[in-house]
Amino acid sequence: MTLEAAKLAAESNVWAAIFPELLLGCLALLLLALEIVLPKRLHAIIPDIASAGVLGTLIGLFLNWNSATLGTATFSGMIVHSPGGQIMRAFFLLSALGVFLLARVTLAKQPMPKIEFYHIVLVVTGAMMLLAQSRHFLMLFVALETLTIGLYILVGYFRTRTASLEAGLKYLLMGALSSGLLLFGIVLLYGVAGNPSLPAHTAQAMNYTELARFLAANPGNFVASLGIVLVLAGVAFKIGAFPFQIWVPDVYQGAPTPVTAFLAVASKGAGFAVLLALCGPGGAFLPYSGLVTPVLTLMAAATLLFGNLAALTQHNVKRLLGLSGVAHAGFLLVGVVAAKDAPMAVGAIYFYLFAYLVASFTVFGVMAHVAGPDDADQELDHYAGLAKENPFLATVLAVGLGSLAGIPPLAGFMGKLFVFMAAFQAGHGTTLAVAIVGVVISIYYYFGWIKAAFFDTWTPPADAAPVRPARTPLSLGMGVALGTLALASVVLGFYQGPLGQWLALR
Image (cartoon, rainbow, N blue to C red):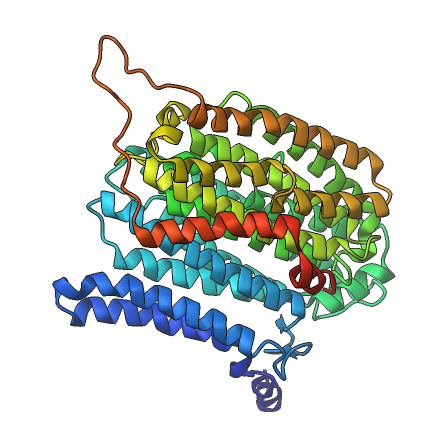
């Protein structure tokens, strides 16, 4: 690179444009410094500082929503600051706050270091925020691997537990395979787009805009098609879509409950942010929609059916939520498929993600209180009699599960309805029919969980001591947080108002 080229590249490095991500990085380093400097008796305030820092970053993001960089590209075109990217930034910050909330309950039951957990979550959250704004394969891969490596550590964080270590190893192996597929696909696209014998060849094929221009000039190219399929396969691993979902139930069960929630919500959101950038309106792969649309349509249908049918036989609630999360990835894929032809599809996907976030953290919050020290051992039987012992937790659980199932008038129902409307507008009737069947199937296992909490009476085995773990007392702060989440599902179900209009515009 010449000196002039380096100067031009430096001019596009607008550091203020990624100020929220820089704040999270500085906050992560601050936590480690405080752990060293502060006496042990004051270490309990460090999680509070982490939560306050994330909340402050979120507030600052909203106050500076329409910044001067919005709609522009920075860092030599590697990052594009769009309204959708801002929405996903807020989504990931809210997810981090939810994880911190769950960690207060779950980490208290384990003799494990706590500050490092918050540090890694902050780093992963920052990487997700950059990933959602990336429009360059180099930025995509660096951000994706940063968050994935952080998740490897978090999944195996309870290193004294065999289930957590096993989950971490499985996630590492499957994640390495998916990264290999993704990287191989990127290399193929970069190589074929740089071929001088092809029309519109470019040396900047890592840039989504340049790649889209090349693909439009070279329809039906086999190497480009293979590269696109491999990239989609790599992303499908991250969101747990069929046929790359095999890791989901084992990893979700073995990971600590806050990490399971992080995987279910934030990691899935990051994957769909990438899919929208690649396959949505103006995406890099849009010129090859004749290939991408059938592939994603088949993947959506198979993901919906597999996730819902496999969840029917589950008794461990973490595995159940993992497989139901596969089904939710199928619903979101329906929205991605419809995005090319239905203007409301992108807004529907964003609304679905926020509804899913609220409902998921509601359910995981209850799970954190019902679970014992063995975080992987969370069975449906453990919820027997919950309504009698703690009516508040049982009610909150019912609201969260009802929203995940898509029961009106909760937010999850409206999220599914918006996605279905987009699919109908786009003319994907068959996929819509499969999605409706998926909703009907999901009602059975979600309501089986509600039934266990409200109607089943738990009876210990006659020849053994009771095996149900002692439930964690509900603090006032956690009660307020869970009540707020449940109320949000109800309010968004009745009235989408400014939120629905705000997301639909994007």
